[in-house]
Length: 377
Ligand SMILES: [Zn+2]
Image (cartoon, rainbow, N blue to C red; front, side, top):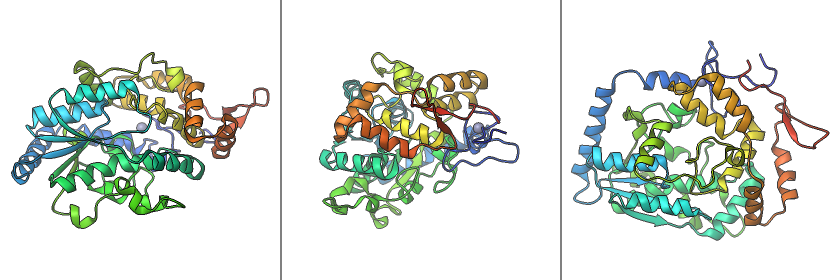
């Protein structure tokens, strides 16, 4: 066994991912969850999904049947079009516009709406978003944490305000990433309200000088009393056999989704040109994740494909070694400019978050290098 981290015997998920559990056979909770998810009871699940859809139609009172939080990316396209075309639901799309949204992000949103949807775009106060992002960089080494709150909670706020009986989320991280904790495996997404990101917590954690809780309405779930028996939330990915990372991408591309222009895995740390295309600066956060836990976006990406048989484990390891933790300097510079710090300061703070069990400094280059062997166990 590697002295610093161990890897799932089936995929390349390391045991350093927060919330992951390995069983006695050395297999991670995501692989085990996938085995359960992919078992052949699809007729049963589709029946359940159709029942949920019909209940929503019956309860919507002529208004919207469901609300779907969308970024305009691959999963958004799949969710929205599946709800509309396969389930016959009248959907209200809810987009929480990221600060610094990319041009291709705008185009993809427009492409989605042009398939015949109503959409509400929310723009959380950019001054607050920027302040929170900077603060979370220093406090958590994870600057997208506050933004994730808004992405998830805002759809519930809109559903509650419009009396929409159903919120359709994408995939359940307990099933696809193996994150054990606040969410149970299955189709029920109501657990989101217990923790607005994979790391838990709530918006009251962000109260600070100049920012009160009431300034962060869209970062908070509505009161329990506004949701219970009024708004149901499901993970579409649990019920639908066609749901997969690559499958959703292929589906969305056929329906007009555009990739990040000039995609280069070395610049974005990921092989998928359709990941987080609306918000480039989020890519910088992956550097912090990489140095904290020893894995990045490519690991996430290949694990999906290995699990569903689209990629061999060896090929996954090769790609992870090549691209994980990579990020173009121009993204880092743009991020530093955004929050008003120097690059030197960025690396000084990042150094603080480096897991010294996983990385050591290369004295010749001054850069951190892995002490672990990807996939080794
Ligand atoms: Zn695994």
